[in-house]
Picture 1 (cartoon, helix red, strand yellow):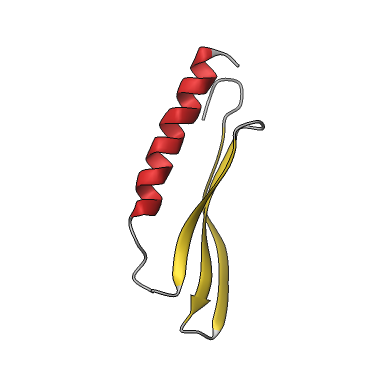
Picture 2 (cartoon, rainbow, N blue to C red):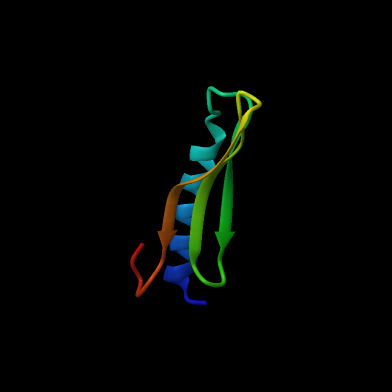
Length: 70
């Protein structure tokens, strides 16, 4: 893995980890980070139960590193 790619992955993961650290106002929901460093794909999802009645599973953010670009 080249240095630039590793640097991009680490920078993106740092930003996304800060993003998921901010909690959602609904206590039944949580943000989760999904990181596939091998394929250079990164997602933040919201998962859980809204008002203990509705299942929530949504993609908030999706990033890919392709050709040296995020």
